[in-house]
Image 1: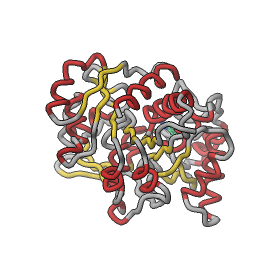
Image 2: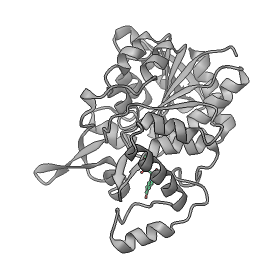
Image 3: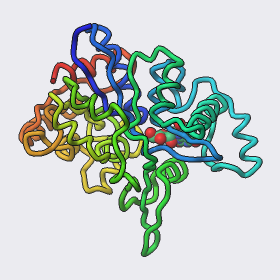
Image 4: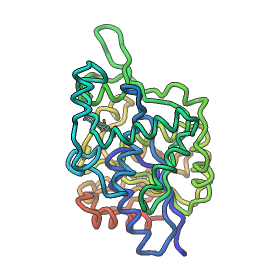
Length: 322
Ligand code: FO1
């Protein structure tokens, strides 16, 4: 096999779709499979089981068993156990645990309880399918994302999943934090893969709650500085977020919802930031000059990942930029 060694930093639905495209693009080049470093800030304990939504979204998508309509969980899932949990008053009434999905959470939780690390559990789970990529959690530490929201004159804190799935991001966030992350280490293989990569791709995932936690793991930024090239893909198309709540998250950290502002948030490598190049949507082509002025090479490309072919074309554009 020849071709570039690629690492993708990913989270959520955007990360999963983009990873499918990267796998396809690398297959065409006969390049080695990508290493995908996945956000674990979305993880939570619920009804005694450990959920890893972003890891599951990427795994299910690569395995071809994901629910493409909802964007999370397993295709064709049922909710019998969920109904029973609700009858017991267990879990969260606004949060659905599919039956097949629960099988994943039970298996994972059992292995964690038996002493396996999240990295070892993910390796075991990924071995069930021919995923065509190596998946790594960003860290083995539990660093679930907590959102601090305004509450009257004060503030209160809640898990990211409650803020998103219960309140649909409707409570104004003041800040996001991942308690314990300052003492966390990258999962085994993460820093090594990034430092050895020919190109690291930042998926068009939420810059604050998906890519943000990965970058906050001590050692990840240092590893990125050693990578040959770092190319980011804009999560903004035509001045809007494609889905999810990145606009609300960006506002909370003082970043405008436009592609040049997000590129500036990541920063140019030449001035202590991360990026060598930034892939932005054709709809935002007028922002290319601002991106270039910030020291980042702009690449204008179609950004809608409507199917695997479109995702692969986007991945090709990002790889070409490196
Ligand atoms: N999102 C929802 O909007 N409602 C749900 O009930 C829900 C359940 C759920 C269960 C397992 C899982 O892996 C993901 C789930 N999601 C649900 C998606 C999730 O909240 C977020 O979209 C991601 O964490 C953001 O990337």
